Length: 265
Picture 1 (cartoon, rainbow, N blue to C red):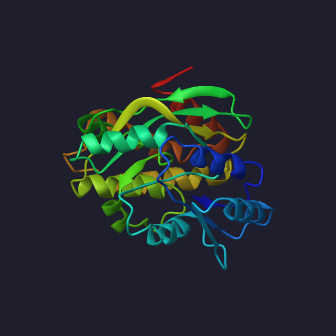
Picture 2: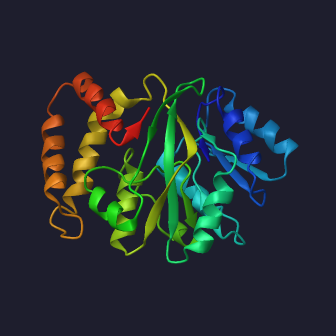
């Protein structure tokens, strides 16, 4: 779990992990030089529970590089690892359900699930569904990211693949493409195991143009790969190229509309 300036939510995120029905876990946190009380809260939690291991970057590295540092800290005895954002919440049986799923499906390298978008008070906004099977994921990835990074359980071997520091945003989308292109297989469970806290701005407007630019750049590497190619995907690619030229506020409104595709209230 990377953490940065989340003093209002980090305790709730930590407690949701420690309260998992699957107890054989270690929580590794890196504070990326928070300027609020995030680090103090993490240290207090660490003193109370020996399953927490925490450290702090000497300088602010940003999320992609901090995630790579976290991958280096995975316990050598671990079989799986799961990403958690420091302002979100895990449903109590998330780990138990996903560990059991991967134990039963040995050809898979990881498993995700549906997620519930919530407001700052954890009030439900809507549920985001993702494609279930590997075949559906391959068909959908060129349209949009087929996974939620938060709450995604992966086999430890996948940690050899690192985030591309060229992408300040959309680094998870680039990595999913790379992993699938290497032949790794993933699925999504239909149940909701992760609550994604959607803040009022979420930095979306600030990074919106960069997100669209990076999405276009990532897709351009696979544009002529028949494995992912579809008419819908190509239309989406050129639509995003046009969106990049539109005013940010309009595109932000459109982004939220698209986020609710395949969702339920």
